[in-house]
Length: 380
Image 1: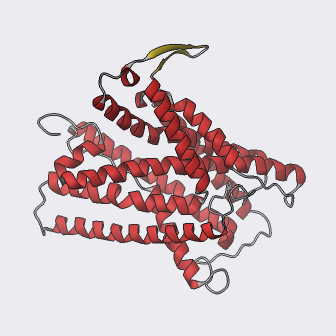
Image 2: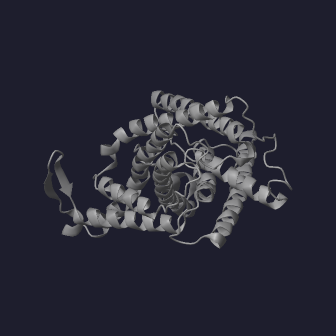
Image 3: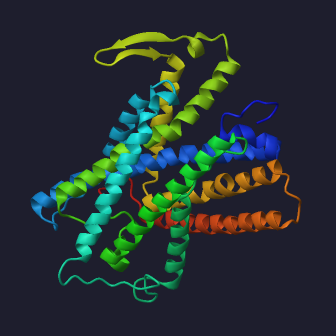
């Protein structure tokens, strides 16, 4: 809040608390993160589509059948859905997506946990596990294990990459948001830990990066299909949650730059059967369609799920989740330099910077290794 006016987004408070240069860095990090996540969602959604097709193929022809396929056509299908959803004018009309996303997340996480428990409970089932994971010299080399550890740190960072502004909320709102955030983090961590621990107990050192799409489970095929369908529905909606701020920023900038342009401002009422009136704007239609096409093409070029997720987490975790929130707090609360709180915040920030650098290095190495064996448009 400044001059009795509340800021309306995370980015808008940054120049008041951290200065102009850091504001530009915050903007770059925030929008780069949003773009990167939409690319990652396109990739992940298509992987789940491929998994459904393969799962049905394996069920019909046997687990040894050649069910290889590419996921490029599924990326295109995902992109078409996003082009249609992107034409919804503003973010407020997508509030229902949060409810759908929560239901879908709970659904596929529960399916993964249930299937893992069933596999662990199989009579006579045994899998190689260990407190330190993969055995150096047997499963991997020491260098490979180090890179895998770095990549895993990036994946964890990505899972917790979010921030919330409650600096100047009134006490009731402040308290409610903090309680909601705490409960959400606890529940999320519980499911993350349960999926990770039970997944490792079920598959051991050969655990796939995603055990619903990596074919740790083949049967019951219909339940695996439902789990992947939940993932797809979740990601179709989540894409919009991350893309709408980008759409809004570009359209707001265009309207400010060319306020008299009919391309920017004029809207046409288009009647859609069974839906109602759709307010069409030519710039919005063109720009949002182009954005979805570009992110889809980039996803086709970089189909490396775990490493891409790790890199996204590394890029966005430190600046948006740690550095800017701590700097804003120190500035807003006027914490004295070299006080206990100030030193603690700086140590936390420094530690998280190291985590970010380690995760980024590991993910980049993984992507480079994947590129050495990557052949575009070949069956998976």
